[in-house]
Image 1 (cartoon, rainbow, N blue to C red):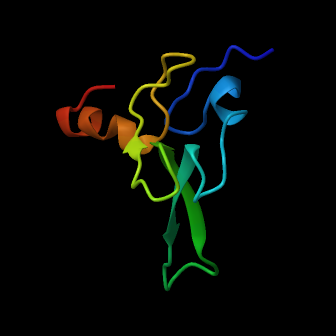
Image 2: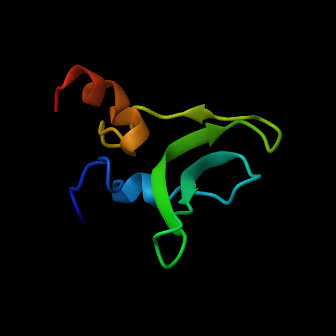
Image 3: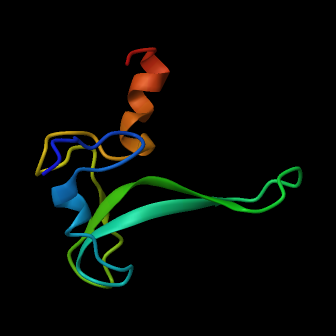
Length: 86
């Protein structure tokens, strides 16, 4: 079993096992699609995890993992970047 915590590039095993598809209740991974004219193809980037109470719920962005205590995704680290911390 891995002891890896959630961070800006990945997530812990416990959170990853509980991910669901968009439109369902539960933990949903958030991605952005970068389309750059100079790049040969579009690039999908993982940004974080949201929790949805129902399929119609907009979701709540997690800035703290309830399983490992880490901070999943680069969106949860955005305030640190503004402050210059790490």
